[in-house]
Image (cartoon, rainbow, N blue to C red; front, side):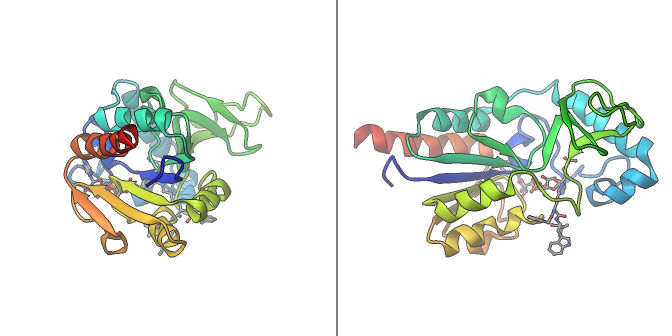
Length: 237
Ligand code: BJW
């Protein structure tokens, strides 16, 4: 693969698992008995704002205590070194990719360290607890909410991601179960447009059969090995 090739990398909760961030659908995937599908909806936010805000306050505080692992660091190294176009599309709402140094990054499901005004749509960097009814610094509506994409809401950056998927030479999926759309459909779009496709995951994902190649194991081992292979091939060329 020439060094000018275009790469799209999709990441999910599995890449942060070894940093101590719980995945959604594995063991321990429940929070106080709630499935993510029951808490992460606009309906849940409207019906029980205290519960939903408390869920995100807890997770916002927690992500500030964890560190990037070898997989985040390896992707940041690839981002810095790769001459061709590259886009990391993360479903994760932690900030471990950017803390590892990644720059060409889209948070398609939002970010823990961000708050969104449900009224005017303004977004603010936010590290502290966010009680229901918090006032928007921009429009003064008491409508601040966690800046995460709930089920039924449109993910961020989809136009840019769609264009990158249609144009890429290689699509790599890391640490995601393939249970949630539109991300679960990226491999089929990229593959149909002629890209090579590679899955790096602990176990076969729901979309495993759509990938040309799959490698199974922990992200902290698979990702550095894959990045080293990509970069050493070009150092020798
Ligand atoms: C390791 C590892 C290690 C572990 N090393 N690997 C019916 C059919 C099809 C679609 C739909 C449908 N009904 C509704 C929909 C659409 C819906 C959807 O997909 N629902 C499904 C439940 C079926 N999707 C939406 O509503 C989305 N919006 C949408 O579609 O809008 C329409 C639209 C799209 C595009 C353009 C225009 C319009 C929004 C989805 C929002 C998802 N939000 C969440 C919460 C974010 C905030 C928060 O964190 O609380 O995002 S849900 C949750 O799941 C989170 C994740 O990003 C997402 C994906 O989870 P992920 O990352 O894959 O984690 P896991 O736990 O599932 O998997 C971890 C994997 O890692 C496993 O495979 C492990 O084996 C592996 N692993 N340790 C390597 N060490």
